Amino acid sequence: MKFILGQKIEMTQVFAPDGAMIPVTTVKAGPSLVIQKKTVAVDGYDALVVAYLETKNVTKPLLKMFKKVSPKTYRFIREFRFPIGDDTFNKVTVGDFLYAENFTNEDAVSVIGVSKGKGFQGVVKRHGFSGGPASHGHKDQLRMPGSVGATGPAHVFKGTKMGGHMGDQQVTVTGLKVMDVDVEAGILYIKGAIPGPRNGLLQMVADGELEVIKKDVAKPIVESKVEVSAAAAKSETSEAPIEDKPVEEKKPEIKKEQPAETPVKKTEDPKQSHKEEEKK
Image 1 (cartoon, helix red, strand yellow):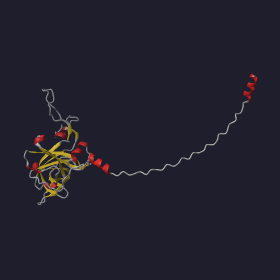
Image 2 (image 1 turned 90 degrees about the vertical axis):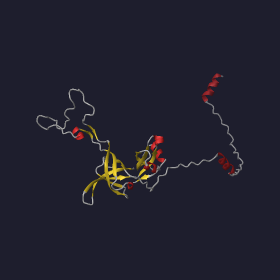
Image 3 (image 1 turned 135 degrees about the vertical axis):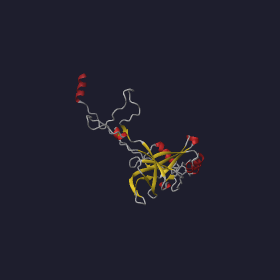
């Protein structure tokens, strides 16, 4: 089984040798990195987890998972399941890259994408109702759903087609065909329309044997930790020479002579002396 992740570019047209015009969708396929391998023994089924489109900002759990495989981080992660004992599953290993050249012309491809969101739509656009008549006594009933049930049950059955949210759902289109492969640009030309907007994520699966192309191989980030034993640390300290520090000579202290204190004559208060004379 062949598989890859990609992005929708746009619709265009190619011409067959007989001059017939064929509408095709251009898809940027790969490179996709295999980051995890799930097995029956551990997870209960065989699957390969594939990452696509490099990005910078990821959550810490994803960053830890990416470090085990590659120094780069990716935006999209999808899972492809395989039947037990599939040759492709046994052939692919973690760290392998998938490229557009894994596909060839005339490959029958199934494409999984998310359809364009249309918001809230009525029954005419959502379910293809004809609506009511535009005249003969009917007012504002042109795009109405009409009756939603009989009087007998006295309730509306589940699943009755009504207006509501339209689009933004996963859609699988089968029976598509690869018309051409641009190996250098990594682009697939797939016949027909593919669900989703431009730059929307696509999962492509085709029959046939997958040949693993070893162009680039992702390598995990290895954090080197230098461990120094206690004995080595002691030996380094013991072997280190001890430098003698020069002894500074003490200079003799020079005592400064303090100036002699001059006696201060007390001035007598005339009022106080007069009071003492009166007491006598």
